[in-house]
Image (cartoon, rainbow, N blue to C red; front, side, top):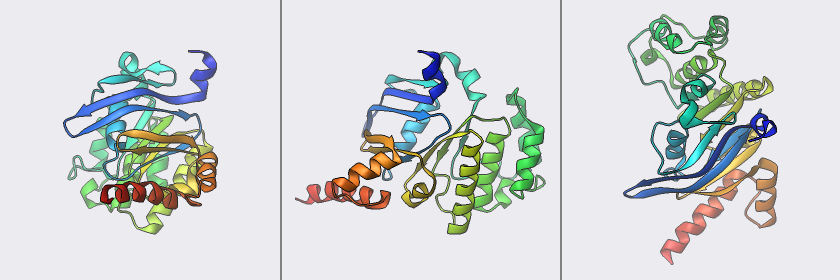
Length: 252
């Protein structure tokens, strides 16, 4: 791979396949450009979380390759995980441990832990390290998860439904954070079924349906081509078109 490609994409997924008894990822391929917020959309059960787990090495795909920063995940997992961060919808581990104690253990795993950045994010997010995750609201739990990821200077954030279950104000606050991080050069893969969030921040879209990638393009090109085809003017309308069409076929 050329140096240009290594610099251009922070994540490259190629030909990913994962087989379960009742579900299969088939030839999942997409690329996340550097400094980009990519929305990863699809209805519940479409394969978003399975893809993310495969990309992170939490499950082992049957076929395909995953490269971060031009490096193969299987051969460079430790080095890669120093440079990426993962955040889901909530922090659900050690719910009764104080944040201070969780952080003391977490930072031992990262040679690039930035204590100054940690303090800065804790203050910016109004997090109290004397509290336990179980004492936090859902929105604050997500902010804690982001703090842990960003405090080791993650260059790529992989977010699995981070705004699910949050109230509209908390969701807007997080979207502001994502836009600010993008301005600092952080790339984000943002998996969600709340398409209105992506209308406000995404640069590109990857759409998965029944374990297969339906489309992967810039937001402008994806919405533009769908509009020309008469599928709608925003992500919600477009998704409703594709999913409703599938539902009606089953009833026919």
